[in-house]
Length: 173
Picture 1 (cartoon, rainbow, N blue to C red):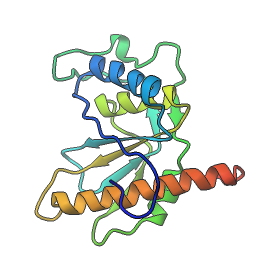
Picture 2: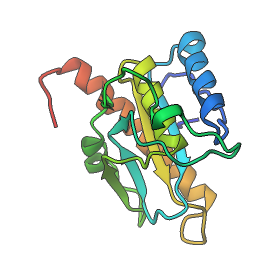
Picture 3: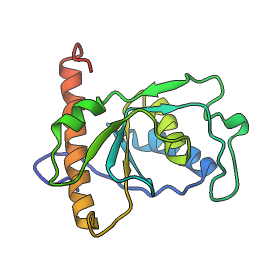
């Protein structure tokens, strides 16, 4: 869970590194669960910090997934907008979190692989009510317990930021 006194239902689902299956599951998440906010967490083996991704991109998916599949033409959603931004200001979330020695950074490029593909589709289906957090691999410096705590803090801050943006729609970043 997220700890604290937030009243919400938290569901966790694991998506495979598979474009076609991710597409099916993301559609099902939005059709069946209708979340207030879908938070996707992807691992980036080269990352040294936790990255909060502001937007998903529609084009440039050239790398094959675990099954050897590549989206036709490298496109996520034919005819879709080039970029879809999250309704959550990731810059504001970055400013609002402090987790010991764990670096949390803002990003506008999620990398054109299955994480970005999934994020774009989720932003599309959820009208911007999605987020993507890229995390580094677990290590002695970032054990699972610390990563779990960091994700709790970040997601709580995302929900607070999202709710404050609804209350004050003129707020911009």
